[in-house]
Length: 451
Image (cartoon, rainbow, N blue to C red; front, side, top):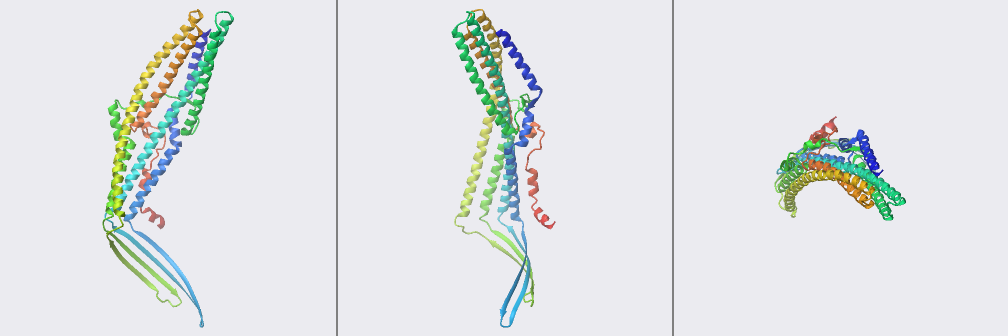
């Protein structure tokens, strides 16, 4: 009877998996949904657009500022001769431009462009982190659901064993110890089932946080393993060349170097040109009416600024050194991540192989121990222990399978290949490149006013 029950449960489990797979929510679908939904990714995009505006602000330092003004006054006085009043209207244009600043503005432009480039790489880095978090949440839900199904099946098995031990006691073939042991194992099975259900609820909440919708019927199959390099050294080399964190660190070094150049340029001369034209009309006598214009220039050379210039240079040099140290740290972290993910894949493969063997053997052991128990050569405790070992092996297989998928995508993220284009996700790629190109057109402001 117990053997038949065990076989039926296994058949039902397989059938359930087949139905689940028929309407599965794939990894690609979850990643696509998360890419469009992720607030962190949207925030990184807005930060990159904000950084792009720094380029326009820096370029404005080399261009003139032009202003127009119109003003009017009315004045009056009351004397013995009566009331006298008059109006005056003035118009004017002003022009100011720095024609030389010891190349400080050029350095600021380069720093802004490097900063915008670093912000673009930060989008890619955030993108990878978000998509990897989705994979972790996805596999957490999938493995937790499998664990719930397994522990529910295990609980049913313990129920059957408790009933069997009670039946055997009634006919004089069992003992009260067998019944007590089966009842205790049933209570333990209930506790582990409740824990698995609670863990599943947490995993589903995490999934919805990243994807924006509750998880449906999940399917862990994917074809992204083809993106993995053939060996560890190739993976490290690819990461060092293309990981967005490393590319962003290089851009940060460029920005720091430009900031240092700009700080040193403060010691040089500064030349500006100013111009002004205007007209004045007044009533009733027209005194002082007419057109006026002026043009001037000024050259300044700093001599002493209370130590501010020197402090600015020293700080910029320190920031440049710090950016280089941060880049070295980024290299080390990426290298560590690649090695860790690669080892995780190898370890998961070994665990899957061992768990498959243990599950296969464990099923035979359980069936054999039940038969021997029915013949009187084994006890109920032997059956319960055999089932516990099988359950542990099956749980290990579930965990190892999930770890294999997570390690695979962790490696893709570590080498910089876990982006929407790399994964061929059907989405509009979030990027500030076009926005950056648009804001570099610093004359658009003047054209907008003219229109």
